[in-house]
Length: 537
Image (tube, rainbow, N blue to C red; front, side, top):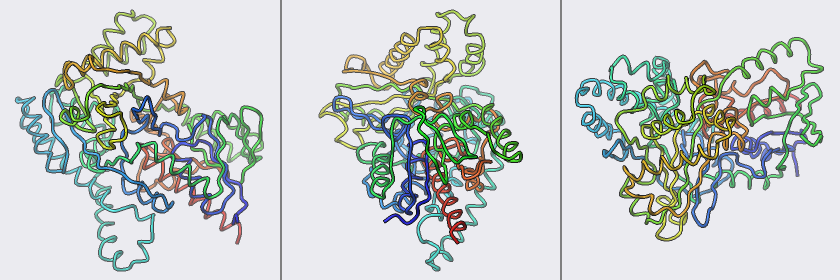
């Protein structure tokens, strides 16, 4: 029997919405989850194309001391595989098995940039230091979850000492908040070296995040059946505990003074608590402030202005390939998860002044100039290459391999191309140029063995997820995010100026991947639990 008749409406059935719905349904609330698409999961989806399985969202999952303990609390059992990361630059390649592999990274960088040996040595010292602090943060499962506090011996001997180290790590990170490109300029004047170290991160990524990420590579894992199984497991739990999910329901009006929302068909849904786990700009555009008191209205308008004037982070272009080559070939050429840069030259001004000029003056730039820029970008960018079958042998037909190749890509560039009327041609050129690069570098002559190919662009991502600018991790670092971005304040990130309205997911905190989406969902659940207890005293 249901223990609590309070109505919870959650908008957005991505990983955050599903996590919040599972927690609240398990707690006995009357939960309704509304999703604008015809399936749940958002970008977290594993698709089947003729027996080849591809992940449309993250290529693997990072635990961050959050994902696995949350799933344990939600009584979700699943199998997962090791996910080793490799890093390749031109013909130099190594596998990340431990922090000590930084020595191999240093050796490769020195071989590529022999005139910068001392600079590289000093940079890698910082990488090692920040990676060690990242290790401290990830060392234990987040103490929010489970019953660690009931074990006094564990608390005294392990958790308390770790807490002091954790706080020290956060203090250290605060000293490295500047954009990583600016920080590296203090060590070297070699822009190519800086680009190769940083161009697979979002623009202006904080130094502590980018240079400490080497340890994060060790935290990746891959679920059996693909990353999309996470949304499947969560969806099952929502239903098991009595929660309801309605698909193809686009919310276009939120009226907090009446505690109700309205979908595109005019259906009204009343709530006691609302969690917005979808695009945050859409929330503020949909809000009707009628009936709110003056103080709440002022706070709401301030939030709205801040949110709507901010920009989402870069998006990605993803090329999906069915290849008539055995998995063993790809195991020998980078493995299951590879960050590959085809040229030591780096993107340079192609991703700075040239990109900015292309966007700003697109109407004045010829088609041939756009194509020339695109080809240069493809030749010099860094690719994330994922091979699902090298983790789970059931994810491709025997003797063949599914390959995903992605790179960061600016939403506005391709949006301008679409407006100019040659989106399909642009996408085709992108696919062919990337494939040509792979064929002449890491996967020799792979063009000859392609069974099929297709792709998704930032516009695809924006359409599926509803995310502003097609962003995959929330807000851009190029300006101060309009949401909380200090880990110590993550619990406050779910609050809004509106009564009984919370936010969760990639837009609630910056930066946000799957772990933070799930953590903010947990915090929203906790706020509702506490409020409900106060109400029912």
